[in-house]
Image (cartoon, rainbow, N blue to C red; front, side):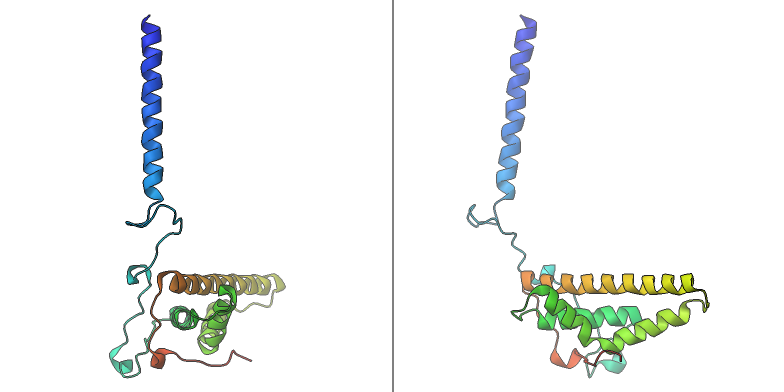
Length: 172
């Protein structure tokens, strides 16, 4: 008889845990006082936007930030252009690529820095490793640009001031 009581008690405990789990899942589906039929994640608001770096004193008139290195300058450029172009009706990946393309000078500076830091060898395998590393950096930059576009669209992030955007044709 003790076994039967323990079994019934365990079943009730298991059912209680299952109901608590369902209640928790139902609470996750609600969006801050909205209807439970809305299953979209509410990401509106500036708290989800990545802030732009502050301008240095020498560039405060233009509002441009002076990044300490070319990679950071390139990321800042892509970030600014992605937020500025995000309202376009094109697919996000097209807008992200346009953001990367708009930062041709910053990309050229980043590439030159990476090439100058790499050891100069004539080995074909070393050169292919360097090219592979640059290709990996570009994939990462393109992914970051896509993130910025989607972030700006989802959260309604404000674009930077127009005078903080610098455009240059891609390196030839």
